[in-house]
Structure formats: C-alpha cells, structure tokens
Image (tube, rainbow, N blue to C red; front, side, top):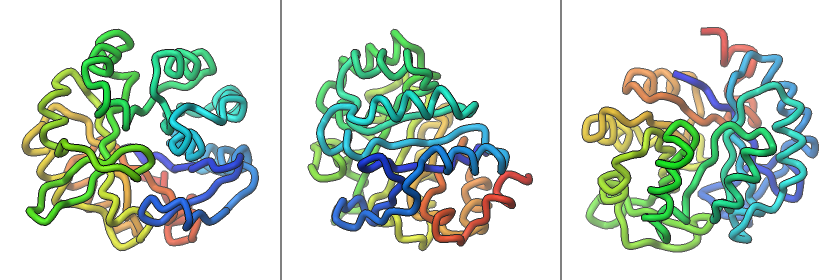
Length: 240
C-alpha cells in the first residue's frame, strides 16, 4: 500500500479543511516546498496535491507553484483541484505532474473524461469521487469543491467508467475529522470492482487506520491532517 502525504494549497500555503468546508481552512505551513522536502526525506515516493483555489474557481489557479513543486521535488506528484479541460491536463503534464485527478468534470462531462482516460492512459488519470451518504445509505457524489450535489451514486459512476484504473474516493463526512476512514465504503468498492486501484482519502488519524486499509487491499491512502497534527509521525510512516 502506497502512502501519499497530502498538501492542500490555498493562497500558496499548506492548509487543511474539515469536511471540505473552506471556512475551516487552517494554515499549517506557509512554504509547500518545505513540506515536500520533509516528505522526501521521510521516504515518500508519491505526494497528493490539491489546488483548493482551483477547486473553488473551476480552473487550475496555482499553475506556477505547481510547476515549481513538480520540477524541484524529485517526487512523483498527483494533482487535483479545478481540472476541467484538456488544456488543464496538458498544462500540468507539461510541468512535470505525473497523474491528474479529475472530479467535478467527471460528473458534468462523463463522455469527455472517458475519452481522456483512453487518450492519456488509465495510469495518468485518477477518477475522484467525493461522496456523502444519503438517507438510504447510498454514497452520492458531490462536486465543485464539495459544494454541489450530483445525480449520481459512486456505484453509477464506477459502472460508467469501466476504463478507469485509479479511483480516489473520499467520504466527506469523515474528511478532516481524524476519527477513521470509511472502511465499509472501500470494502464494497473492492468487492464490486476488484480491478480498480483504490486510493482511500479522508478520516485517517492513526496507524491502526492505515493497517485497516492495508487489510482491505487498497492501492494507496492519502494522509494529510494526521501528519500536520502530529498524530502520525513522518519518520515512522514509510518504514515498512
């Protein structure tokens, strides 16, 4: 299982949100280059970066900073947040980004994103499904920085994207809470879509959470707030 330490960029700083609420943004480090150096020294291979300003604006905003981070870190980087067009994708790839994460546009332009996966390769496009369970216990996908509801469930989206390889799935209700990930959601995805590589995101607050995800068999897990709050030590995160 790959650990992807996370950087959420807001106004050029490293922040974390609670349940996707921009009003809860807490600055942890004003220098994202410093965080990448710490991740690299600890032994990380991948880093998960989200352009929160881009997610809110609907287009990639922090292009120069993302280019600098991708060019100078020596790490493999996946980037999400505000990616809506093929120009966004090609711009990020040209700046050294290894994988792009598509969320809202995968709902609003499903046929287009399906074609992107075919064109650029399933190893280069991560399908991001941010969800919230409805009253019937169905994980419904939310879009535009988690501010809008969609008509699709996680299951409907995964059925449609039968050419996808990577899915980044976040249960919004546990994101930033440090109370544990949505294990049952990932178990269901693993059972129903065994060929998908699941990247778990949201809720991780302990080494026990990481072990539980490992036992499910997810490909990777994004770890953010638990690192910044000191609940998981970088020095121990990549020792196994």
